[in-house]
Image 1: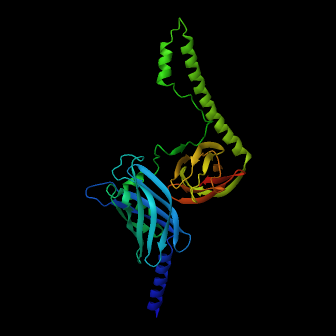
Image 2: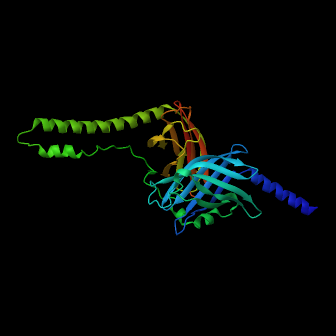
Length: 349
């Protein structure tokens, strides 16, 4: 009788996991081609809207780069198969993060045992790229069941690059100074004109041309400065709504922002402790990464999202993912023309 009860409980637990993909999945992804190649370290954080719809964030480390995307897909509970379409994956022979990307579809099957739960499958090349980009196979383990997640991640060399920003990312110092905009260097033609000016004869036409060029350059600086000032003024007029308060374990964090709804042209500015650190950032499924050093002189540091527009579907919404090297937090942000959305962050003592 006890044996039957134990078997029944085991089946219930297994079936529960089979129906629920929520959680973090980790593992290597290897290119299915002969030879020695760098692999990908992948993290897939999934949520289920209902039994057939899934969504979440897929992130991967490849060589010295980090990429992250918001994704949606489907799950078939009968076959235990998941399908996520159009995942941009860096070409396995690319030398830089900004290199060629292959659009691939993620196909995987959920397997559940007493030892672990796994997602086994591959990033499958779409027809357009089938002669260039090989499939990439993976076997992800369910992270919640990994007692020592750090030891799992440490097995992958790429993970050591986790806190190394790429050129496209935004690095935020602990204290923000007022942004300074310097005039752009004059172009070659203008410099050549300056060189040909005979100061003894004062070629009026040449001097006038140079003066106009310099004037345009200075005006351009003024436009940028005025733009930032307008954003700050609008930010200060809006109500500040604290969406969440967090305690983190590190003195620096990575913040990633995505459009978690329909991609409808939302544009935002990001403020750190009331100062702008990024403006005119378009939200999409591709994450905007900010690396922030917390100000230890403050009890609370604050990250705010300012809506520059409302896109086609108001309000301006985003998924903010905050990582401190140990824990990962998800915050759903919503801002409008009347309010900013903020997260307050404390360093755990």
